[in-house]
Image (cartoon, rainbow, N blue to C red; front, side, top):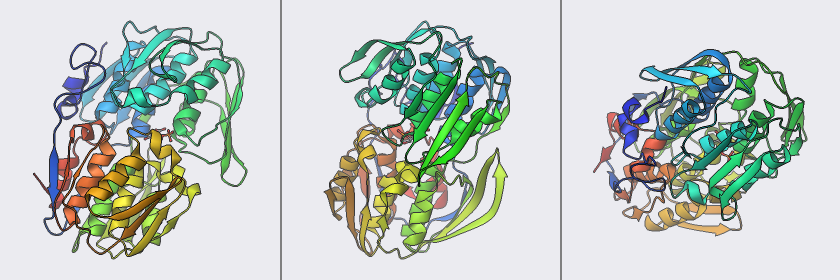
Length: 468
Ligand code: S3P
């Protein structure tokens, strides 16, 4: 059956650009939005399901035999694109209710060739993981998306897939989308050291390796998020992850497992919870509890950093949900001080730098964020977009090589308009700044927020935030 993402989550449909409608490279009219200071933020919220785990649950549902039930799936546009791609590759994907989905999988080795272009919209994770899936099967598929996705480098994925036997039939300049990929019938087992710490890259290789007759090994110098490894093990694959060097991992996957469908509970996304967390810390008088935040050690670099900056964050009710550590976080307004954030921490907080830069603008003294080269290839060049946003808000900052240095103060001036470049996290970060700066902040386009956090505005308003 075909998934209809629009029917599934109306909030996400505004940014939907299907090949037939708004076109594969844009979305509807821009939706400017402002956030103004409105006093303390108070209350509780549960952020939506984790985006990384949501993509993976659908994809492993496709690759498993039997029916996978998913609870708490993020119904943001990015994930709905992956659901549609799973259906195009042969799975039966059904939405049973809010966040409740089921996937009847095809099994490794039994995918169908999609009849149309796989349009991933804004979603780098969906694109790259699915390139791995296609790369390991004897099928051909074309991958495309919006103007942001078309700028993102795919060579890092296509190179190892080529070593495994996949062929790039066509690509835009520099290995960019649209990309047509012909997968390998019998992917060669490879041992691959990733040149950048990227969970998307690691996952693409492992997903291609599923259909290999031998062992696939991925070595990473800096450990990246491990949701693919954990979920593959949960679905019955033989996969071992061992330490490699001071911060690295060596992951070995036995090919051709019979993946068995499982039930997946998706914990709350720490990358989305980060916005309420920082908003509470920088807004005087605030007291906010964020429920069910995933505390996977490879995702909580922001919490560690904020605590080093003097944040009052209490970890309450620690427990395990859906195989991941989770906790409720109680955050109260805190006078932060600047910190030196080591490059080695970047993989554990890679999506949180824009909102950390906002926190740093409210911290006394200098915050230096080191080793941010990967930020240049996210949904936008986030290093440049953050710098421009800080500039618009009157915050003193500079970029030195791959480091971002922010000189904070008690309450930044604010009052600027920020270009979001189709980047949801840039939009949310600077709206958070507007909640606590002296003057409101505006973003030129908030539509992309629906890719990862369709309920952002409603949840923040429930805490007391004011948008206009
Ligand atoms: C993700 C990995 C990260 C992250 C992205 C989600 C994933 O990207 O930025 O939002 O789910 O694997 P990289 O692997 O490129 O660092």
